[in-house]
Length: 97
Image (tube, rainbow, N blue to C red):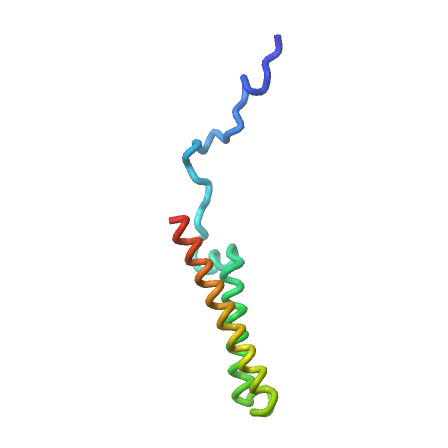
């Protein structure tokens, strides 16, 4: 009579075996940044630190006063984002290798 699906097909792709990984690392730095949310978070944190430097130096606004407080807030927040992004990416990279 008719054959069932389990007799004629397997659920696995013929090109990969059960113990092989299908993960392919990205090509170059731009590929890693394009594929990684954690690296994008780290870059955003770096931009916050850069913004805080501009706020504190008086390039964008007058130096001192309330803008110095905002510069400190952006610097602390940016440093936290950089650390979170880089440490998280490092942990994932280490676990995959």
